[in-house]
Amino acid sequence: MAQATVYAATIAGVEALPVEVQADVSSGLPGFGIVGLGDTAVLEARDRVRSAVRAAGFDFPNARVLVNLAPAPLRKHGTGFDLPIALAILTATRQIPAALTQSATAVGELALDGTVRPVAGTLAYALAAARSGHELIGPTATLGAACAVEGLACRSLDALQDLRRGALGSAPLCSSGTPAPNVPDLCEVSGHAAARRALEIAAAGGHNLLMVGPPGSGKTLLARRLPGILPALDERERLETALVHSVAGLDESAVLAGVRPFRAPHHTCSVAGLAGGGSPPWPGEMSLAHNGVLFLDELPEFSPSALQTLRQPMEDGSLTLVRAEGRVRYPARFTLIAAMNPCPCGYLGDPERPCRCADGAVRRYITRIGGPLMDRMDLVVRVDRIDPDLLIAARPGESSSKVRTRVLTTRDFAAGRGGLAASLGGAELLSACRMRKRTSAEFTRTARSQHFSGRAVTRTLRVARTIADLDGAIAVDSSHLAEAVGYRGLEAQWAG
Amino acid sequence: MDRLETGRRGEDAAAAYLERIGMTVVDRNWRCPSGEVDVVFLDGNTLVLCEVKTRSTDAKGTPEEAVTPQKQRRIARLAKAYLADAGAEPCSVRFDVISIRVLAEDRALLRHHRNAFTVDS
Image 1 (cartoon, one colour):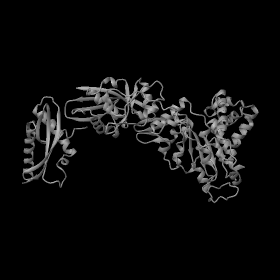
Image 2 (tube, chains in turn orange, blue):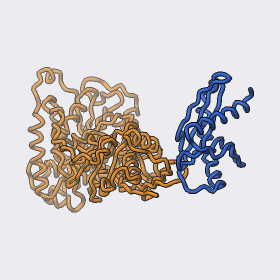
Image 3 (cartoon, chains in turn yellow, orange):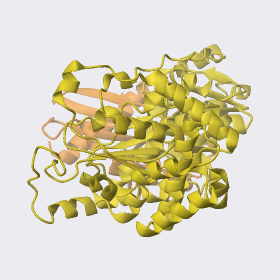
Image 4 (cartoon, chains in turn purple, cyan):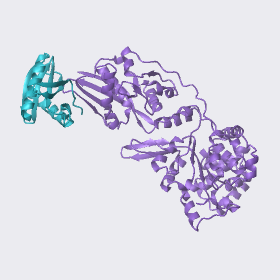
């Protein structure tokens, strides 16, 4: 009798895949069916759509209504299909003109009173709409983020009632640069020269950092100040990172304003919480920290299985979840900052307080982290208890803005000579280091005597390259290498 | 008055009510192997299959509550059988429920639920 098609999309990973919502209204036993592999939330749309359509003053057809979500083999998730289903039925029954939705992707959840509610992942939907050359129809609340997608027209629809006027709202104003949230400043940290230096190297080169120290020595304090000395996200990074946050239903405005994410999951975090997972799959903390900082406090307290999931993303910058319903890929390029006590009681190696741990307890504690993960730690630094005199005299440390300027200069310098050290590998890295014969021979001897793995050699060279960048040096010399080797491994921290 | 008698009188009252509001009753107690349709009537061009529920006490809930989802599905199945049997022209179909709560020997409360349910799949 009557058919209509409206375009929608469903989220898979951090991408929205286009879906056609086809409605068929025909005579026969009255009923409402949805086919096309929708999950429970999609099937529940029947009741929401029926009530919302009536509440908006339209007629819900007393006929056989069949909705098909094509392509049928693709699993569809979520409540974002409510609006396109309602629009398809209203178009099929000629209650709204077909032209209204002809070249648009619609997304939104319906309340029973006809209000259109926002759903997670607007940015992904916006990109999908832009790819199909469509405009995006959705509630005003979510369209602010969609402005980040260039060349996309947005039409707002906040209630089905508005359709009775026969026109949609025009594009909302772009959320113009939300003020950056207050990131804590490094000047509030006094002392800790070694740790500050390591933090600066980590920021300049994108290296991973492990801070080891007794309780209350300021590890967390330092880690929280890392985002403040990192450069702002560039255009591409903004979109990439905001996309993950959008899909996870988090507020993406800070990311779109350029602030790097700082994620600090609690140590009870599960594997799925860290890596992503669930049904439908959601991004985990590693992906939410994409292009930003992942801070793991009390590193050995994390479950070993959760920690081991860090390994793949730390090498590849992304992770792939393989599930029965398919595979999804999430980006996960982050700077890992970890903090831990040197032993369960926390005072091993403290000059004044004795360690009270039983024999073997320390080793068990350290081995929870595992060799492979430890091997990926570029910088290991001790953060000792600070002398009360120093704390009370409270000479403010160097401010974040000063350190940040150095970090930016260093990154510019690195870009000029061929890219951030952390992104270089193999032959590229060696040529970027421009070491003298004598220097490289010396390094080879050190690496052999300390039983460095291949990865440890590469990572040490990268750190040395960044230290040289901080100096503005074209060539890596032995002092740069010596400092880099000094940051290598837990053992180095207890030698002195 | 036993339960069957209550039901029969309820259906009579429902049919009388439907005639009074201008509907054309076309069938009463239409039977087939899978069950019975209480009243079938025409509302304009719409063929309506109507379930009549009569109760003399609310002890087991209101009459309309007795039309459970299982019962709705049964009525939908019956509808297909009815349409096939009656060889009806293609037309729109609707399901109504009439609930009758008996208050006294000669008094009852009748509620007519138009389009009471649909057959969602």
